[in-house]
Image (tube, rainbow, N blue to C red; front, side):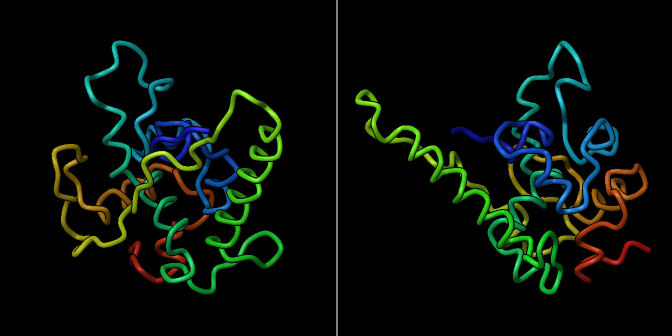
Amino acid sequence: PHQDCWSRWTGGDGAPGWTLEAAGFVVGPQLHASGAAFLHQEHGDPLPSMSWPANYDRPGCATMNSLFWAGDRIAAGIVRDGGQSLQELLQGSFVKAMAKVARTLRDVPSVIGFETLNEPHPGWLGSEDLNRPSPGPITTGLSPFDQLKRCSEEGAWAEQCIWAEAGIWDSS
């Protein structure tokens, strides 16, 4: 398995679309139109140089990675399918998928191992100020909160932004 930028729906590959839906995203062209992700399939050719890594700083990928690693803390009390927290749902599903891969490959003599998670990313965890743009050479140039506002205005969320639902961001 391989993943970059969480999922093909957030500009990379890896996790299935239902994971984004569980966090409240609309899986479709709205993710690109709202700036939640830069998607090659929506942008078309020619693809701008080094465009996909900037997805790590966009709301789709940053939100999902933040929820995967610390959802119980940043989205405490928010539950989904079967009463699970988002972190439990995401991590539990990931562990089950990797266990299935291991069982499938265990008797293949040419396989000595596999990588379970390529380039793990913290999302916006550890950011000192979500009102300021993320530092670094590959960034959108907008603060996380400015990006969330755009996503809310452009229909990236099925209902309410998960960051607003968790009380971290005031969408008004």
